[in-house]
Image 1 (cartoon, rainbow, N blue to C red):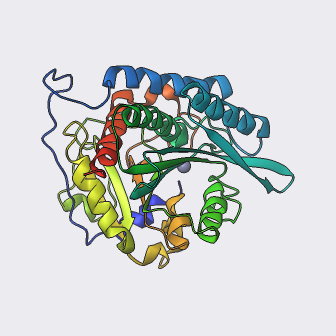
Image 2 (spheres, rainbow, N blue to C red):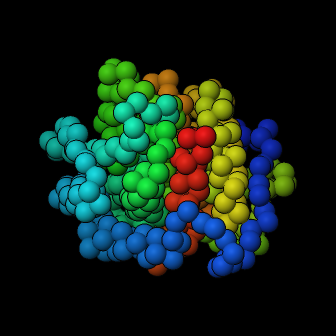
Amino acid sequence: MKYLIILYTVCISVVPIYNSQAANPGDDKRNSMIDIQETSERLKAHLQALTVTIGERSVRLPENLEKTVEYIQAFYKDIKLGAHIEPYDYQHLKVANVVAEISSGSNPSHRYLVGAHYDSVAGTVGADDNASAVAVQLETARNLKELIDREELDVAVTFVSFALEEPPVYGTRYMGSRVYAKKARKEEEKIDGMICLEMVGYACYEPGCQKYPFPLGFLGYPKEGNFIGIVGNFKSGEFTKALITEFQKNIELPVIKLTVPFNGWIIPSVRLSDHASFWDQGYKAVMVTDSAFFRNPNYHTPADTMEKLDYRFMAELVESLLIFFKSRSR
Ligand SMILES: [Zn+2]
């Protein structure tokens, strides 16, 4: 993720939507859709595999990009979910997006895409950016598959792990998300909303640990970094609203909404991550994020490692996503 600061400065007209009354963690009266403790442990195991066993996942170590693809494919095989890779060329390299689909019924009314880039900045193992998002993506797939095996839902979700998002590929047509979105448009793939997971593993609870550029800090945004942010454009307004409404039902994970005008084109560097590739093809898309360097001091440094992440926070995001997908069937 790049240059989030400019994004926030164009969002100053937006009033925060924030559910601050988090319940006591571990409240046993809570009726969650997933096993939070077990999911936390599974998320941690993904971080171990991606950031320690594999390590840096940048274009300067293409063998590690390949290992990551193999890891993701092996995961889907393990949960008995069909997946395929969509390879493409970047300079002399062969890289690939990994695609898996969960569908309920033969012609579900709602089709969503959950995307996350799996590469990291050169010289970093990218725990928050963006192994956290891949881990949440995989555990969302696991839990959604289990849910659909148990009950009939009227929804299909495609999970795409994107090859390249970070520099030097960032902003070029070789980004995995651009390759995918362009093909989706050409093949008239129906996507009612794309959810881009971008840095979703870092939380902080000391008042003042969450930073904002002037003047957002004066507009009533929370001082603690315990929330998840949702960034949408105007076209995605209805989709963003639906997500926020459902996410707010998870009182363990506060949520904040930001809306970007003009697809971010007024200042090109607001375009940030893989959601912009879908905006450009006319799809509705949002970015779900912990707000990157406004919270995480280890952003794009070798200190972005797995022990700094909050696995319960990540598990709650899996829960919120499950609540949203289930709600689409009503
Ligand atoms: Zn990123």
